[in-house]
Amino acid sequence: MRKIRVLFILGVWVAVLPYLGFPQFYKNILFFLSGVSVIYFSYVWYKENKKEEKKFDNFSENHFSDERGAVSEM
Image (cartoon, rainbow, N blue to C red; front, side, top):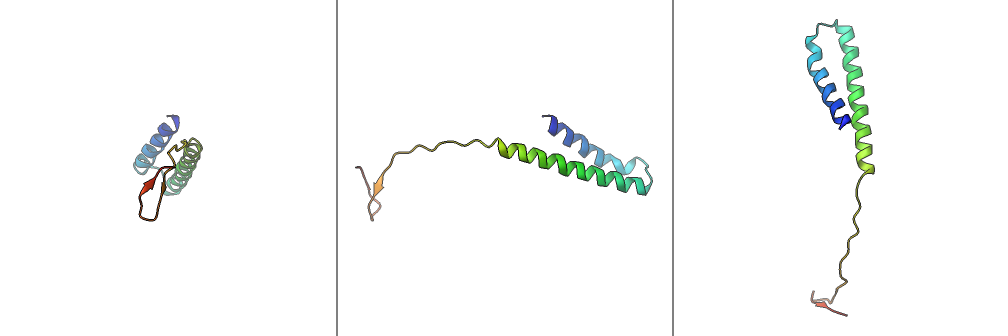
């Protein structure tokens, strides 16, 4: 939940940044740093979610079919 909050705050920061009155040079630097931090947090969040991928065993009965597609029990 913390990462979602960080991404939300960074999104609000990027949305408000153009209206804060910083000189263009500082605004460019802040946009760059904000973008890099969004990329970093998104990548870390993606990697953590990928590790938590659940694997389920697939259990099914073995049925053998002949060439016609009919299922025969053994």
